Image 1 (cartoon, rainbow, N blue to C red):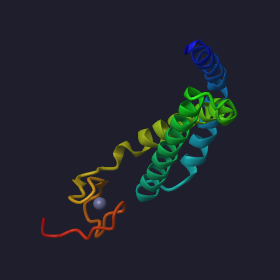
Image 2 (cartoon, protein in one colour):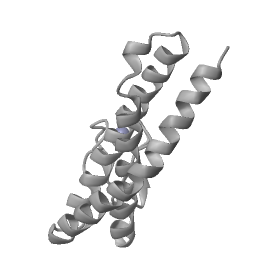
Image 3 (spheres, protein in one colour):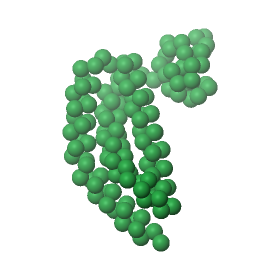
Length: 134
Ligand SMILES: [Zn+2]
C-alpha cells in the first residue's frame, strides 16, 4: 500500500543528498555574511528567526507528507524543495549557534520558557516583563 510512498521518499532522500553540496555552499555564504555582522543581540535575533524558519519549514513538510499519504499527489510537488531548504537552514543555524557560543544565556522566561540574557527587561518571545529583583 505504501510502496509508492516509500519509493517517493527514496527519491527525496537522494535529491537531498545531491542538494547537500549546494546547501554547504549556501552555508558558506551565510557564514561569510554573518562574519561581517555584529555579534551578541543581533546574532540571537538571527538565530531566533532561523529557528522560526525551520519550524515553519517542518510544518510545510508535514503537510506535504500527509498530502502524499492520502494520495493528493499534486499537493506534494514542493516536498523535495522543502527538504533541500531544510538542509540549508539547519547548516545556517548550526553556524549561527557556533558563532554565538560566547553569548551567555542565563535566564528562562517564567511565562513561555524562552531563553534570554540577563538584563533584558522584557521577554523577546512573549513580551513578559521581568522582575529585576529575581
Ligand atoms: Zn516569554
